[in-house]
Amino acid sequence: MRHAVTIKPQWTIRHPTGGTLVPRLVDLLVQVHEDGSLLSACQHAGTSYRHAWGLVRQGEALFGAPLLRMERGKGSTLTPLAEKLVWADRRIAARLSPMLDSLASELEVEIEKVLSAVPALLRIQANHGFAVEKLHELLTKAQVPVDLKYVGSQEAVVALHAGECDVSGFPVPIGNYEQPVVEYYRRWLDRREHCVIHVATRRQGLMLAPGNPKRIYSLKDLARPGVRYINRQQGSGTRLLLDLMLAHEAVDRSRITGYTQCEYTHAAVAAYVASGMADAGLGVETPARRFRLEFLPLQTENYFLLCRRPALESPLVQDLLRVLRDPAFSKAVNELPGYDAARAGEVKAVDAELPGLKHRPRAGKRIDKPAHPKT
Image 1 (cartoon, rainbow, N blue to C red):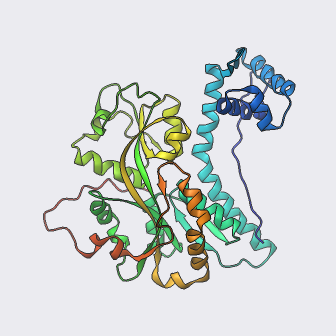
Image 2 (cartoon, rainbow, N blue to C red; image 1 turned 45 degrees about the vertical axis):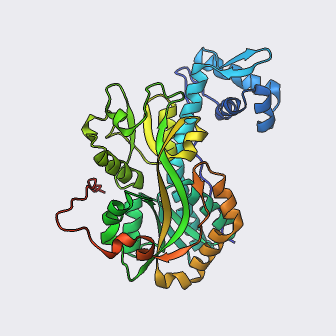
Image 3 (spheres, one colour; image 1 turned 120 degrees about the vertical axis):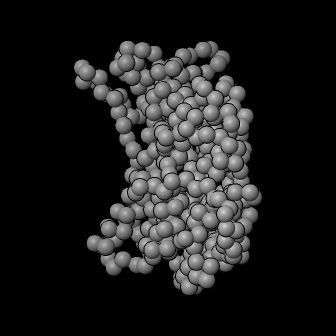
């Protein structure tokens, strides 16, 4: 049995006089934010009410400012300072967790090399997404040895093309944007050799501040003065989709404030908007709901795992298919807002699922593509 490595980010604040913010206080404030009650937060944390108040008072002494407001009959509410601490914790986790998960997977492999002969590994490269996260959890539970690396969608497809992984994850829009996305990936797709394994469909849309105070109702509104946007990195499927939609809507990206500022996951974009540092960002629905943001649906996508046909018969890929086809996977994914795993585990030839591979655009037809990343 493989030893599981878990890495969690931890941060603190140190006062010039030497006092330090206690990490358990941040965890407590996060729970108060979720429950609206200090008593309920204590029950979740398994700590006494008296000890919790001690932590709160210690934090208030460190900052010289209150962290909680208590009203009889209304529970507990966070002060603006406490809200900022909760936001900081969520943003740190959203930005670092995928990187740390990839590092944990790498360390597991290295540890096993020392302890015993390393078994064959299912090498997965994929952009960080919530269905992929559930898949990794269930593969680990099923004791399928996995080496997972979170990378951009383009990098994942390139890795499979180069033989650096067994399966790679990437999204393809359903409808008008399918053909230009297929054309973008065409150079790395082989009609004779590749197949796709369906994981889920997911909704992409604009994540907006609660109440949508800037009245953003379309992509064209992103170019209005005073609207701040937070983007995804080049090479991600979401960035590719955004650029195609902007071109279709004739929106000049240079007029979008924040277009060049990037985060690397959907959750990090949601955290950025929730902090008030941006008014909008494109992403999947799940983190928008978790951060209590408004969500404006724009596009539905298929999320696939790309695989070479001969690899389908390998024991590890067969294990992967069994997990994808297990009702436990569908149940876990269907509970994610905006996701549907009805076709999970379905295998098709790449050109049967993506018929645009069978022909090239007619000469003279221009396909707008974002610039390739330099990395």
